Image (tube, rainbow, N blue to C red; front, side, top):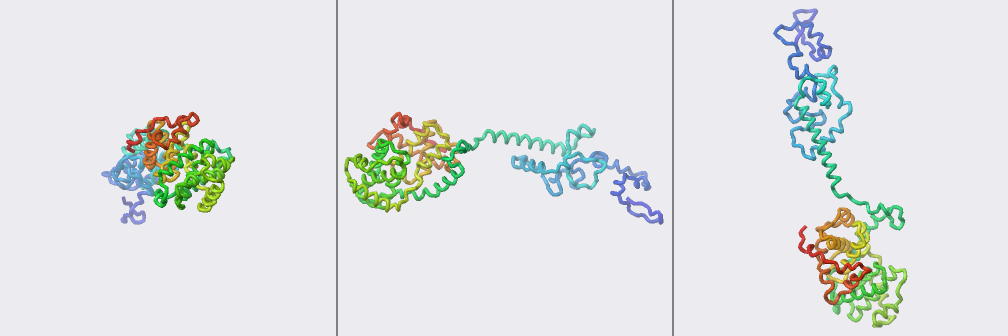
Length: 436
């Protein structure tokens, strides 16, 4: 577009088209334009005559991938609407300033403005006779699809299993030490390796074997039951026996003495009312004297270097049962499962935390007839169903043969009303053939 110089009519100077347009087109009216030229407002009604749409003046065609854009942020519209992409669009939509979301004021709009704006399509439809451009319809449809996906995701989140705060009910219980409980069990998980022994330590013993160990522990379970001792005492007793036998050779005649002395030490550590030495001598049919018991106690303490404070399966059982939101029936079945493992030498290959988690999992499967393991239990135990399957299957086989053979102390104990007749429950046979 050109114009004439007032001082020199022969000189033709270019006219500032942009400035003229912003001034209302006054200079264009003054300039002599040929009759074969159309008014600028008629050249392209989609650009000048009609209201500006988002990015309608973008220099690229609408088919290009940045048709809906900001000069600093580009969002391709030709990509498939995946959930991840939808979430990205929703985040970008939320980050748009509020002033950019207002309808465009036509009087102040600039033709070469490249700032993207979002308009209310419904308001635009009501105030404009021209059809809504396709890319505006596409944008609105895409935003509606994002909203619909957000609603679906929210519904899925509601349907999914939520984590349970198992310590919320103990906030006012100072004995529950809610502030430190997670740190305590994190320490137990690190320290449990110190309470484990080699699963083949019997190879170092020359006069005893794993069968004799099983007979001893089966007898001690009955002694523990008759003396009505605390549950912690039994697990610490077994732990002391294994740790002592793993480093100290013992003849078979002294094996029962080792068991009696280990129970005496465990009682001193856990019980409020400790059985006297004479009671333990009497229960062992006076096979040993008081002097022999005290000498074995001294030897065992020195061999273990006074290290009696170790995490046994019992400490993990308490926490994991709380995570499983157990009732009395599940608790009794779980303890039945894990006491069966105390007698079995082959179960020494599993750490205490795994034994506890597997016992609860096997008990749940036995009582419910299906494999149940909640997200809360998996979180607090740090074991998945796949990790527990091997140990749980062994427990089911022990349950099947608990009433047979000579080692029936655990079965008789849990066949009483005091222990809910847990031993008489049908074993979870399906777990042996289950595939996860």
